[in-house]
Structure formats: structure tokens, C-alpha cells
Image 1 (cartoon, rainbow, N blue to C red):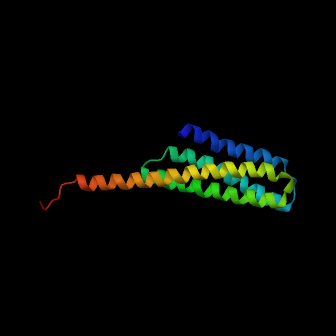
Image 2 (image 1 turned 180 degrees about the horizontal axis):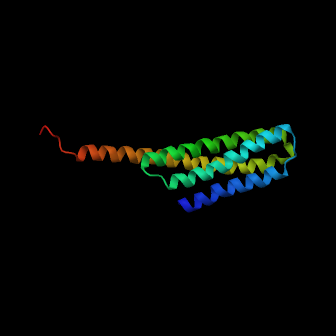
Image 3 (image 1 turned 90 degrees about the horizontal axis):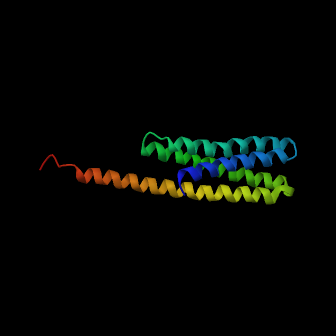
Amino acid sequence: MDKTELKKRTKQLAINTGRLCLKLPFNAVNKEYVSQIVRSSSSGGANYRAACRAKSKPDFINKLRIVEEELDESMYFFELLAEFNPAFKDELRILYKEANELLAIIITSINTSVKNLEIEKQTEKSGRRNPKS
């Protein structure tokens, strides 16, 4: 999956989350959880966009780790909302599944990026001349 598609999917998760939240009944619990999930679901996409503009590979990895945290947080709040809103469990399950898929993609990207960075560092080390020789 390329970065354009991932940007679209993370944005769509935030949009779909917001649309569902507008349908939930207003009460003290939903008020707090909806506030949290709207922030975390939109933050995942915003931070992915920031990662795409990273200044370095370590910066890219760090920004992806923020995306990972935000997606995981969104999944937590989908679970909580499902407990308090059984009539919306099916819709919440769909959003949870999408967040989980995105999370898996992000974790794979982090692992690949870390591995590639380590390889680059090793290549740089082996390519340098030993000053004692």
C-alpha cells in the first residue's frame, strides 16, 4: 500500500468515526469517550501525514510510533463505546477492524524502517576506512 492510499484510509477512519459519534446518544459517558475517540482517530491520520514529511528516517520512525499509539487508543475507545452502546456494536466493530488493519500496516512500516535504518548504519560503518590501517 502506498502513502497516498494510507493517507486516504487514515482520513476516512476519522471521518467515519466522527459520523458514527454524531449518531450516538448524548450522555455523560459518551460525551467523554466520543471526545477522546474523535481526537485519537483524527490524530492518527494527522500524524501519518506528518510522518510523510519527516526530516530524517529516525524522525519518520518516531512519527509512525505516534500513529501507532493513536490507532491503538482509538481501538480502546471503540471497545468502550461498544460496551455502553450495544445498538452500535456492529458499526463500532467495523471501525475497530479498520483501525486494527491500519495499526498492523503501521507496525510493519515501523519494523521495516527500523531494520532498513540499521542496515544503513552497518553499511556506513563497513564503508568507512579504518584510521589505524
